[in-house]
Image (cartoon, rainbow, N blue to C red; front, side, top):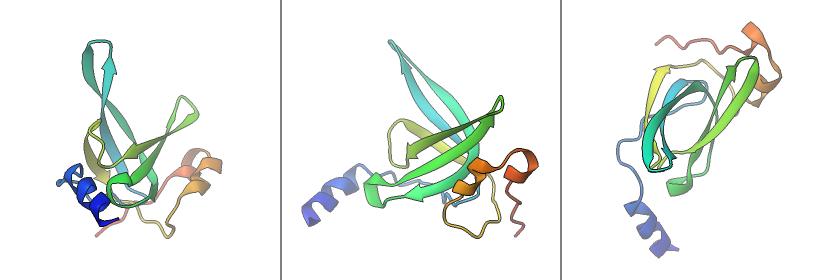
Length: 114
């Protein structure tokens, strides 16, 4: 098992921002369309983090045209160009799956003021 950890260390990124549950994050994701490659922005609330090491992921949720969209991003994926934290949220849960049932202002997360 230690050999697998050593191999996984090579593919991990060094400059990973501190992504916390409840944060509003901008995820810049590389999209390949035919021969061309472009960067697409996905901004929303971080509702979950899972895993550890090279297989760690985080889930971002946003509402677009009245429809909730969730995307799961691997933190150490080469397709994730960068992640910017827009604001920090004040939450008391490890998973914010309850936001799926909320609509409008009830689905907002309060801002953490430090």
